[in-house]
Image (tube, rainbow, N blue to C red):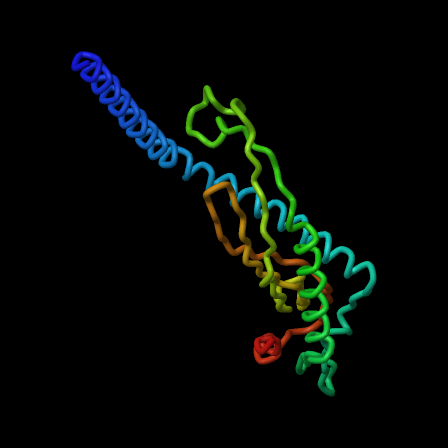
Length: 216
């Protein structure tokens, strides 16, 4: 009886030791894998997030411009003096604010619509190993909606030749992007710019007129 008890105790002791050893090995492997994968996974997540968000914003802006033909006179008016030289450039606040709000609404709707987009990436591609790139089981990289996309119209003046100035009006879109992987979360901010209208102004544009859009 005593021998049987000793054998039983020894067997239990060996089993416990093996279980503890397996847990330690698994924990060490998990920690090592996390440290190796996290930087590359973060890079892949940010790249996919920016790509998907850029496509969604471009789609929304294209649809808006197709439905609404924006011209330079919608946003700005050039005032000339008695000698025919540009004296001032006046912004049209109503149209500026209208475009900003409508564009922001369309962009956020497009981002929300594509919020469940995902891509499959081989696990080996999330490591620094060239030998494992493109290999292993696939995991899904998912985009969460960028709910805080904002639009701001701005203007820029560039020389267009002898005594001529090109005045460009563009939409600057800022989006807060959230992407996720199993056990990982990533956040980044991206900015995009789209040309809405432009005009060539003949004559020297006064400096005070160049900054007429600084409030918007």
